[in-house]
Image 1 (tube, rainbow, N blue to C red):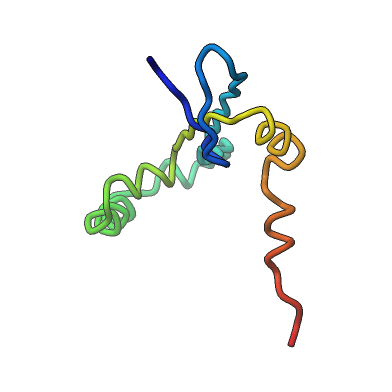
Image 2 (cartoon, helix red, strand yellow):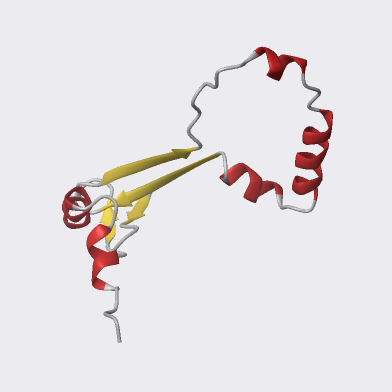
Length: 102
């Protein structure tokens, strides 16, 4: 039998009895088309490309991929689902952990 666990609170969710919510998050680098001028077409980008490849050479492939695209999938119980919908970006948690100026 397949069982699920709430990824926030850890509650075990029975497949037939409990309502389970699936949260899918997709994070990707935004791309805004650039205007290309005549100077851009005349310029040789070889040095720039070599520099970028050199910068990427010592980096982990997964880290490079995560800078461009990453997906997440979470199973939530009804209580955690309701809390998630109230604050999907977790702003409340971030505000509670800030400390005042000393």
